[in-house]
Image (cartoon, rainbow, N blue to C red; front, top):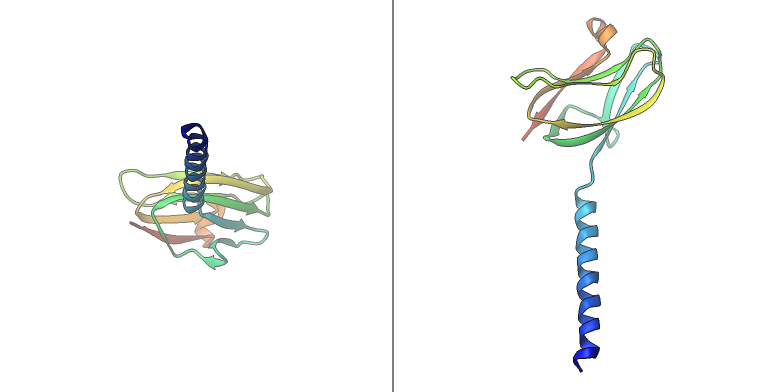
Length: 128
């Protein structure tokens, strides 16, 4: 009797572990933000189709579509002792690049470095 039930118990336990691991990985998927810079003097960052104004702290995947060789896309934490700056794309690059960035609470911005003074950038807040 034990020989028949032991394999069944093992199969059930393995199936339960696989289900739990799959459910856990789905609930912890990294949110994707979409950025665009160019072709004119515009820069945007959206999440689920809406402009980013505020996000919860955490890790995000930035997918940036750089449409002009005169622009770049920089993400920067503006204030605090732990300044963070990430160039997702560089000037001269045209195409799509991705970067995973951990956003901590505080003021953040995204901008085109060569044209930031012309208003090519926006602020957003990261909350706890």
